[in-house]
Amino acid sequence: MEAIFDNCCGIDVHKKTLTACIMIGREGKITKKEIRTYSTMTEDIEGLRDWLKSEGVTHVAMESTGIYWRPVYNILEEGFEIMLVNARHIKNVPGRKTDVADSEWLCRLLRNGLLNGSFIPPIYIRQLRDLTRYRSKLNNNIAAEKNRLQKYLEDANIKLSSVATDTLGVSGRLMIRDIIKGNTDAVGLSELAKGRLKNKKEELKKSFNSRVTEHHRMLIEMSLKHIEYIESMMVKLEGKMDELIKKQDLAKDLELLDTIPGVDKIGATAIVAEIGADMSKFPTDAHISSWAGMSPGNNESAGKKKAQGPRMETYG
Image (cartoon, rainbow, N blue to C red; front, side, top):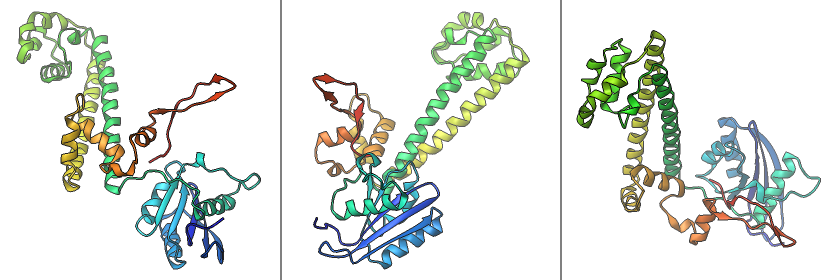
């Protein structure tokens, strides 16, 4: 089989070690093949990079093994054409299941142009993705902590949620902080109402006819502080997201996405973080649908269709 690339490297990535196989040679003839093993420490990955450069390697392939490929990719991406491959798409030859064989097989497949690389966006998109995904996690944590706080309030016979639309709105937080301080006066607590909640003072008085103990106050205070801490972290994340958007001139892309019904600024930022701003990476709408896991697979045999989840062609 005719070689597509002359100087190639296949890397088998693990948590603690890397096994790299290089094949050098033009016109389909391998004039040099060498396999080395490195640790995944930064110094050793840099040593791998220097070795590949000294051998004239131009193309590198490695499997998308968990998160362990990322530090390797980050160090090698500037000096080589890197192809990150979905492990599911690689068929090993029977009887050759070792780290050395894996790296050599990867190298041969790469050399002969038989690999399809995953979509890996530029580093600033990857950074934005980290920020948006972490913000999403924190948002879920806040929702869970709000439910926990509500449980403590209910256990203390405080029925604030039955009157106020938002228990942790401006008025709700003022009242909860006063309860934490030891105030159990229903009339005094209802007087803290702001805005439209002022019209429900009588209902608020009834909702504060409670049985609050020191135990309840401690748990409510801890839960409220946890919520406010997570909220402060989200503000920091959003500030970093805005800095990155401004630096990479992504504001126009976000404004365009923001015109979609149901998509706000945060949603638009998440979309850009996941698929990037350069749509030329996806030849057709079908490709991006497949990458996003929205293209159902087809598993049928002998006239029977079997259940199958969405199909994802590439990772990243």
